[in-house]
Amino acid sequence: MESLVSAWIDGRLIGLSRWYTEYHVRTCPQCTASLPFLFLLKARLAALPGDTTPDIAPTLPARRWTAVAAEWERLDREATGP
Picture: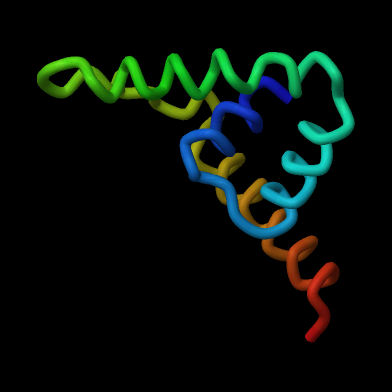
C-alpha cells in the first residue's frame, strides 16, 4: 500500500487503483494518521529549489509493466461497465 498511497498523494493514480487507495486510506487508521505528514513532506519537497524529484525507474521489466497496466485497464472496464 505504501507505493499506492505515495502515488495517490502525487496525483498519479486513476481508475480502480485510485478508488481502492482512497477507500483504504479512509479505513486504515495508520494511513489516515500518516496523511498530514506525507502531504507536508510533499509540500516541503516541492519548495526546494531546482529539480529535486528523483528519477525512479520501474523495477519490473517493461513487459511486466505492460501486463500490469493491461490488467488494471481490464479491471477498470469491469468496474465501470462497457
